[in-house]
Image 1 (cartoon, rainbow, N blue to C red):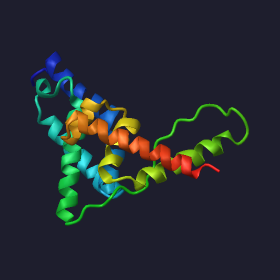
Image 2 (cartoon, helix red, strand yellow; image 1 turned 90 degrees about the horizontal axis):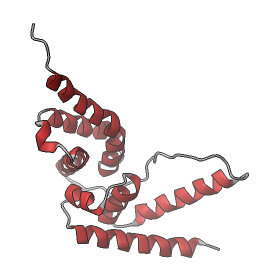
Image 3 (spheres, rainbow, N blue to C red; image 1 turned 45 degrees about the horizontal axis):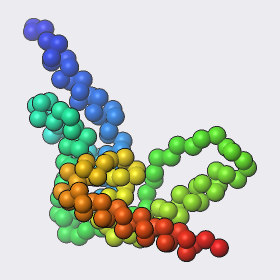
Image 4 (cartoon, rainbow, N blue to C red; image 1 turned 30 degrees about the horizontal axis):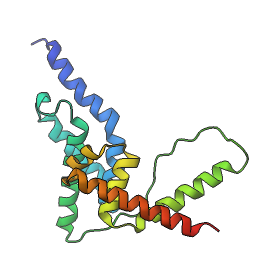
Length: 176
């Protein structure tokens, strides 16, 4: 029996690290793309990780996250296309981190605001929804979003600018 080298052990670790760190956010992202079908989203993400296992580490070093999001996005688009129809993003679950209560009712206000913003995001054009979610829910830079979506960096910036402008206007219109 051959003893694994240090490199073989590391090769498995970088993939395990990527799965641990990125699987859940990828499933949430893909679920939005495939009409909130969690099973299909998990299948797409699993397929992306299988493809990652086939990649030499050197080919994806330094941009594993972008690579995963790009592969997941492309596969999700293929899945939806195969169905014969594109769906707009539907409202879904968003991971939420809460700080301690400042005052009674603060958590309810925050939740109501979050729900209102998510509803407004769902009313944006599909391409604006996607870049807003990649930027603010997944924390990607414009350049990373550009690589994932295959849009130019300036187009990503424009879409985010227009979406934020629309969201601000819609939120202001909702204020009493």
